[in-house]
Image (tube, rainbow, N blue to C red; front, side, top):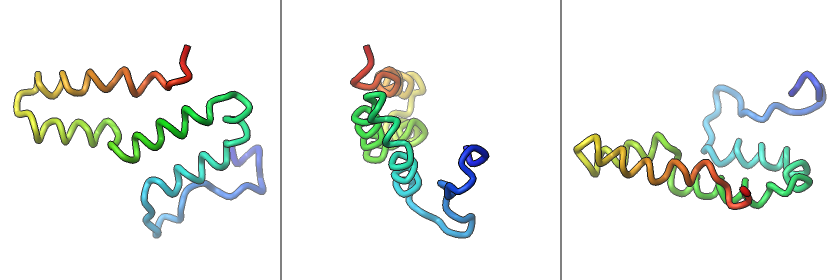
Length: 93
């Protein structure tokens, strides 16, 4: 996208600076907020982002499930309940 917007700042922090995931994600959402508002998706994006930052992404949930449940079938059952929820924002028809 920088090719189309030569004056835009990169959305990622410098390589030598670590930041919580919420920082670059927040900057990204602020950057695309006008488009998300126009398309009616801002609320869904904010909701999904909040949930992911609080509960963790799929990899985090997989590790937690594996720590709780030793049997792979139990881990798969836990994760399959959440997979569909991740894919369907509340604004989906």
